[in-house]
Length: 399
Length: 55
Image: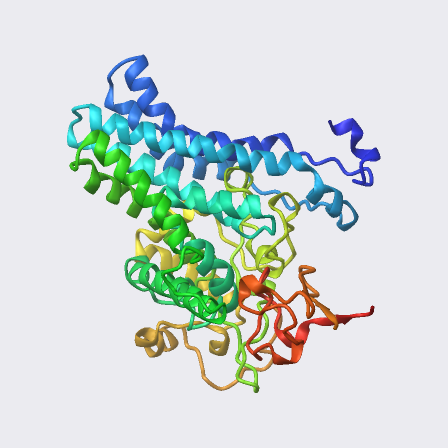
């Protein structure tokens, strides 16, 4: 395929990551491998921990070893890159992988007697794969074609999180890096506190956005046109069928898996905009979201596994841009590891603050006007880091 | 009837067609869209950012 590059509008550009995007299928597919090895090779609970260990240990190590990639496709190659259907087909292919993986894992749990640590392993692995489903639903939900938008809803339905499709595009992207956004973490806010704001906040924002849209359309909020209800109905049918097959005992397990899937998104939201703040303009409107309002990571492996989600600044600047075309820019707020390594750090709030607070202060030029503080910790953090409310000289310097 | 385009993602609002999915029926004038209107596709451009397209 690559020798065609000069002829297909890529202006001589060769996408070296082209085949590597298949990692975005393989890594989420690992959740399926554990139960298969257990059933086909040997009934060893260790197999079931495979994908979780891969996510928390192997990926952060690979990110450390393989390092970062700062290369971008040239702007003139982007239209051809966006039009190349190969990249879309990779995302389509992940939908059945995630559905099969979810059903096999639930059936595996329902049909096998496992020790508690075996059940826990399957919950973490399957919930983790739902996290990749949220990432896929995110990529496809931003696109304009009806097919991709429906595939997003179908994928998000696995973890009962179809409302993300509405709330993310029309809510988070509008409100990002402001105190109004339940999906932007504040300085001093631990992930355990954030989740209580993020999960309910996201659901109600989605519901309100759909209620407003349907009111303009002259329809009931309970109409089948409600894009929160559409994927919720798919979830209800899927879960009801699995309960009819495997018994009601499977319900709490499925709910735990769905929670762990949603928590993967919470983790991503937590690290993507931690502490960063858009300024309010005299008009009362927030300044447009700038590249320095998102944290980024160029780490190779985690980007392959996540469809470039970590090139987050460019995503917020150009939300409909496809994953293969997302770019890095110099002087962006940077994370010291990929998302998976940063999730681990977030589990230990003192450690998170020790690593991230100095980076945040540097990213905003020590200007408290540019920090999204947890209100209860504002004064304490101002004192700890010697920040002053008075504008600093050159405080507006680019991050 | 004029068409207005989002400078970020290329979404077009055509006054003749409206955007029924968003609750703006065919024939809804640009001026009668709420001031809080944001691009339905990318959500990062406001009403005042849109450009009128020459016929």
